[in-house]
Image (cartoon, rainbow, N blue to C red):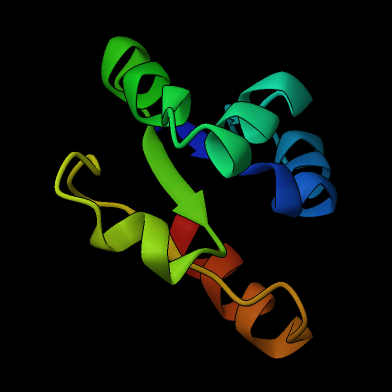
Length: 89
């Protein structure tokens, strides 16, 4: 399984990569477009590369064009990230 993570999960992305998981981070430019213009390039990126989206944004998951199988994570809770890591492996 390949993953696409939003920009707020950059540290988690590094840990996934260390563990050998195929994880891509949303670029800073894509994040700025998403937060200012409302253009969701991360969705297109997920669909094009067949990646599962991991995000911290509940509103992002509610959008109708959100790719199926996306996960919501809370980066402030170490316990939740550890549980998510176990599920992702």
